[in-house]
Image 1 (cartoon, rainbow, N blue to C red):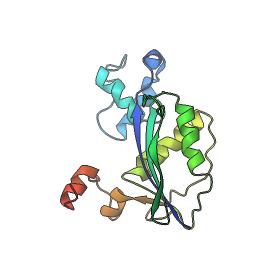
Image 2 (image 1 turned 120 degrees about the vertical axis):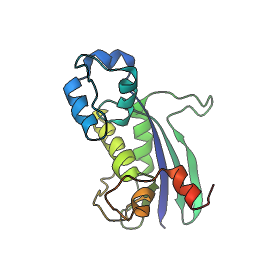
Image 3 (image 1 turned 30 degrees about the horizontal axis):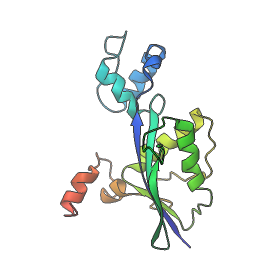
Amino acid sequence: MSKRLFIDIETLPPPEEMRASINLALMSKLENRYREPMGKTGVEFTEEQFRQLALHAEYGRVLSIGMIVEQDGKIIHRGVLGRERQSLRFHLDEARTLRGFWKQLDDFDERQDLIIGHNIFEFDLLFLYKRSIINRVPPSVRLSFARYRSRPVFDTMKEWELWAWRPGIKLGELAEVLQLK
């Protein structure tokens, strides 16, 4: 019985009360891997730079994890981890959300099961691992992040680009190109 988990995460910047304790040198180093350096003034972040912290697991937080679990071609679970079932409000208990995610992977078999998503190789799964370590939530499975493989992680962005070193296409753009929209 093979299982396929389709995932996508949504993230938040750190809580406002953490703003003063953010290491500007570390954030500048993290941001330099991507675009414009953060903390240009050397003293504080702009509001936009603070919001961009949501993209860095070192400071950002997991708000929610959208998930569909399919087993032998049938959907057995779909939902959003990170919100209350009754009210549908986000609970903001990141450790609880992460525990729920890893619980879904308790019986994950790397030889036959897949985790599928768009840009999950370099963003979603790495973010989830790092935030799990920070929140002291032990992952239930150690996934391989070996490049150029499509198992146990199938990243639609990487597969579309054939693992070439270039910026990836956004999911909405790919859907448009493939006329899935």
